[in-house]
Length: 151
Image (cartoon, rainbow, N blue to C red; front, side):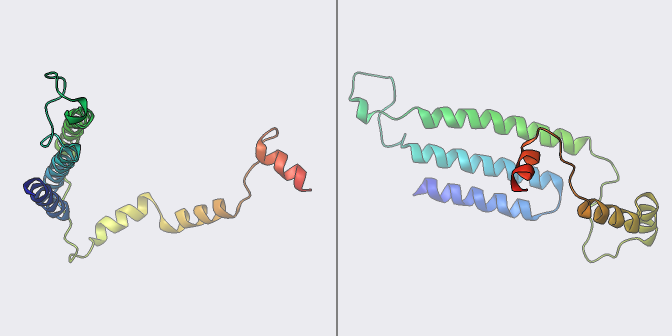
C-alpha cells in the first residue's frame, strides 16, 4: 500500500511539473515520472514478498524474479542519459527563449519579420500546389505495377 501511494505521489508531482511552462520543471517532471515507473516495476516484480534470488538452496518458486530488477537497472541508466541530454539542451538553448504569456498579444514587429522571412500566402500556395499535384510513379515500383493491373 505504501509503494502504491508513493508511486501515486511521484506521478502527481510529475504531472504538476509538466503543467508548468519552464523547461527545468518539465525536466524534473521527467525525472519524477521515471522514478515512479521504476518503483511501479519493482513493486509489480514482488521482490518484497519473496526470497532473494540466487542465494541459498531454497525453493526456486519462492525466489524473487530478477528480471524486474534488471529492467529497473536498465531504465535508470536510460533515464539518466535522457536527463543529461535534456539538461544539455536546456543549457545550450538560446538566451532569448522566453516563456510566452498566453494573455499577451504577439508583437507586430515580430510578426512582420516572420512574414518577411516566410510569407504565409506563398507558403499556403506552395502547399496547395503540392497537395493537388499527382504523385510521380517510378517504373518497376509496386505502385506502377498496381496501376497497370487496374487498367
